[in-house]
Image (cartoon, rainbow, N blue to C red; front, side):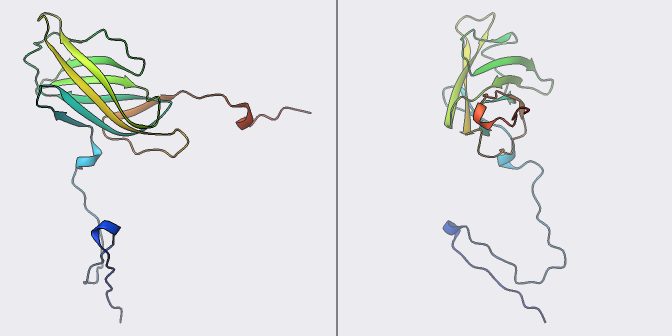
Length: 173
């Protein structure tokens, strides 16, 4: 007769706990959209936004889609401020029929660590109306695995560096 066992451990050590009841069918159920599986848009008290895009890799190019709530201070004619940033740029801004403003940007992380790049959306008709968006990513070196991308983030390319020592080409004799 098989007996159920219980593995114990503290929450700090990441312990595992097994059920006391024998299970004929063990399934793990997740919500349709986990909190940690989508790009998070967090409103700040000053009217700006923090957008958390999860784990990315250096030297890779990503398209990131996120939806902001309606921005009445900017009106209907929203565009990206012409502030040059070599790492991030707005590709498209569209008003959603169900409300909100969908923003698509292209981002290429340039170093490891927690990076924060800033975008500014402005109104074409209202002077001095703007909203700042901080895009925050946790960036790992391009040699350290492949991150699971959040919904709304898509890798569209990699900037590869040529290293003659790592080349597979040996030539012919």
